[in-house]
Image (tube, rainbow, N blue to C red; front, side):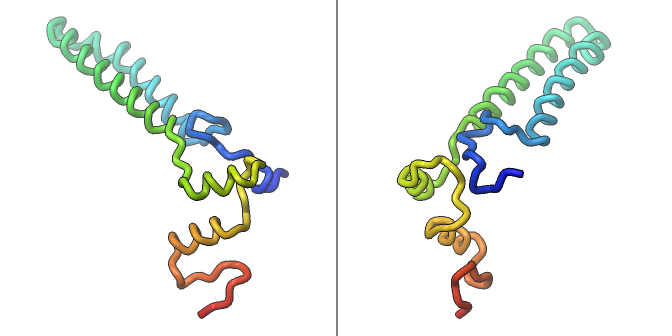
Length: 119
């Protein structure tokens, strides 16, 4: 088994390995489009079918566009990015000043970190 310190950092949501919810959301979007085209559009009156289908595909295009923009962003904190760049190894650190600082910022002072004495 690979230790967490050997796992390369994902640059964004389009970088493997993909998570199960990410793959399921892609399949769900494709299934929704197929369902609409095969089952919903044929039962609508012709005039309504044109308008509703155009609206549906505009919404799907927006969901796809903004979804791709959201997962293509590198959400790395600038200070953590600087620390990793200084390390030049490109792997996730399991110990260090930046990681401890992030841990404190999100968990408060109630929880202590390794090598730190309680107040």
